[in-house]
Length: 345
Image (cartoon, rainbow, N blue to C red; front, side, top):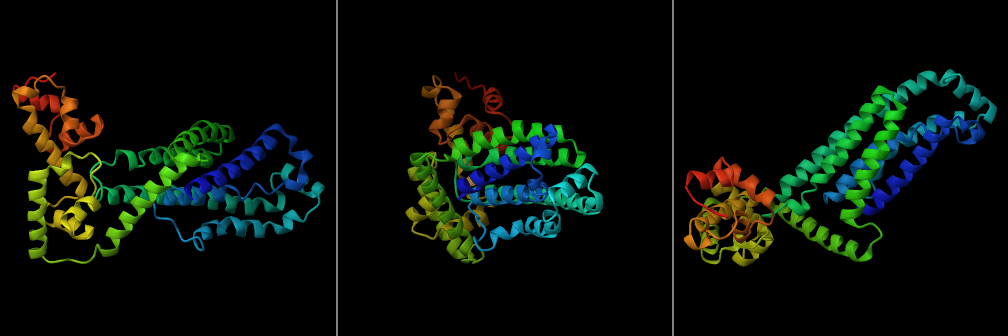
């Protein structure tokens, strides 16, 4: 669905840019029948961004209600019906006159466009933030599914709306082409795989797994099992971590651990939250930090690099290791080793 929304959005952007070129070049006078069709298009970009982000984060709006976000654009088209029925000569006269009798209406539409842009940029940021918060309760490594790149995409859209507020057409055009289209094309198409059957299937399978996990936990997240039950589960969890070192699996996730312990994922999530006051991501990565601290002092490991020992502890990237180490220890790995007089390659 995210691919389809992005593809449709690119088509709409293409149509919008065609209108832009026609007006900038002055050739719009050769196509008076199409005048006015471009006015409501800016009201479509915000909803398309939001629906795309919602689809990426697994919180798809209902197909029967999601498209209601486009109602403002449809209403504006309806309001402009009388303008569309004018003759080409009258349309050209109104445009050359700066709006004529429609000048006040265009002012209100411009205000609506700005409000729509700001609203949907905020909603999109919130959607990604909530998604990242939810997956941190399910996965021990979130780098590949964190959708950090979507923040860049939304930021690009935000900058475009700032240009809209400034009413700088050249700046808008430049930002759309350079920042938005290039970023959306690279991240959206490259990472999701539009029109690439093999990659699309892989991404779809992964997305289905994530969505099922999210819905599985959220379905029962308000049910408290009781302290005694949680303590028993925590004891099982601790034993498994100490004996089998499950945290060393870089792809470890909440559902897999819950299956091993033969408990519902929500109970395991509650256990970690209640006793450790952490989500699953923080709990597992703390275990990995402790494992790194344990093995880095061993004499036989002095020949290995810091990163190789981090990977041995369960981390799957240097960024994740450094970020989590500093979060829990208050210093970088090298500073920690220096303070402990530990030499590692």
